[in-house]
Length: 131
Image (cartoon, rainbow, N blue to C red; front, side):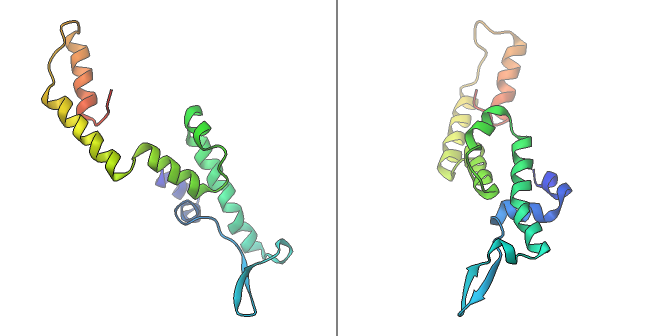
């Protein structure tokens, strides 16, 4: 996915990784959001990157994945949700690994399956997919 964003402009990946840009100005020693009317052309372009990143993410997703994140309006939030869904937390990864090891250790041909079906099941296990 990184390469897709990079092909559209490296700044796009920064938005996914770090969150959207918000133009600010200093008022009485504090940074406050600038009113839209005061944004420079460069600031407008940087603010628009979040929408472009969302478009790229939505374009790359299947319908079911899209439905999980379509209500989010920040590219970083969408990305973070997808990472958790697909990679999981460290506990989820550990449990998945334990399950795969268990399946591998007990692997044998089922009485009603062909060699091809057995091979496909084996490839799923060693590929890291839990059937």
